[in-house]
Image 1 (cartoon, chains in turn purple, orange):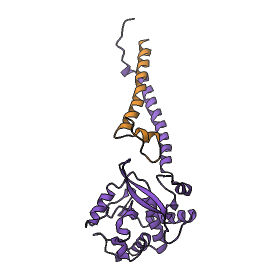
Image 2 (image 1 turned 90 degrees about the horizontal axis):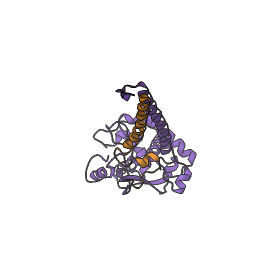
Image 3 (image 1 turned 120 degrees about the vertical axis):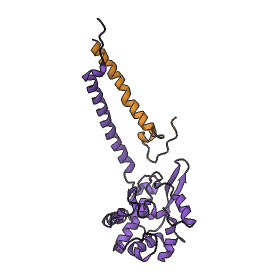
Image 4 (image 1 turned 180 degrees about the vertical axis):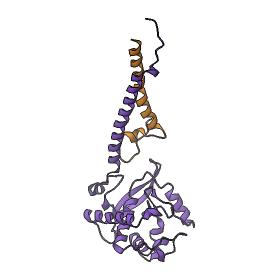
Amino acid sequence: MAKENLSVWTSIPFWRRSAAWVTGFASILLIWLTFDTMGQISMGTEADLAKGITKRVPAPTVINYHIDYKMSEKRGHEVPVIGKKQPFFGKEWSEKEAAALLHLGKLTSQAKNCMNCHTLLGNGAYYAPDLTKAWLDPAWQKSGAMQAMTGKNTVEEAMAEFLQHPSQYPTHARMMPNLDITAEEAKGLVAFLKHMSSIDTNGFPRNFSKTVDQFKNGGTNAH
Amino acid sequence: MIDQFTDVVPSFFGMLNQGPLTLTIFLHTVIVLPMFWIYASEKKKLNK
C-alpha cells in the first residue's frame, strides 16, 4: 500500500483518548491527594500525646503540656516539641473540657474577627503580629516584657489579662483595641493560641527565632 | 536521588516531594508516557 501522509495530530480519536486519559488520571490523583491530605491534617488523640506520637495537629489536650519550638536539623526548620505536663490556668483539662475550651476560643476568634488584623496559620492580615506561634513568643514568657507588663505569673494568665484589656497596655505602634472579650472567652482564646502553636506548620512563619533574637536586641516586633 | 524521608506523617506524595519540581516532574512523566503509547496505537490504526 502506498504510504499516505497520515498525521496522528489531526486524528480526532487520538485527542479524544489523550483527553480521557489525562482527565481520568487527574481525577484519580485529586481524589487520592484529598485522602492523603485528610491523613495529614486530622487531629491526633489524647492517646497519641500520652504515647508521644507526633501528629501534625495534636489533640486539644495538648494545652496540658509544655510546648517548645526547636530547630530540626533533619527538616531544616523549627518544629514544635511537646514536652512534660504543665498546668493550664492552674489545672489539668480533661479531653472534653479541653475540646470545649478550644471550641469557645475558635468561635471567639471568629466573632472578634482576629484575622482582620492578625494572621492565623497563614490566613488573615499583617496589620498586627502573626499569632500562629504567639504562645512561644519570649515576650510572654517569664521575664518577658508582655508578661511583666500585665503583672501575671504565667503565660496564659498574662495573655488572658491582655486580651480582656488590650487598650490598657502600650504594646505595638498600632495598639490593639478593646474588643469586650470576657474572662471565659479570653481563656478560650489563649487555649486556641496554645493549641495553634503546637501545630506542625513546616516551619511557618519563617525565621521565627531570628526575629525573636532581633526582638531581644531591642527590636519592636517579635514576629 | 531519594533522600531520607523527613515529613511528620508518612505519605507517598511526601516521599516524591524531595525538592522543587520533583513531584511535578514525576506526575507529568507518569501522565505523558502513556500518551506515547496512545500516539503509537492511533498511528497503527490510521496506517491500517
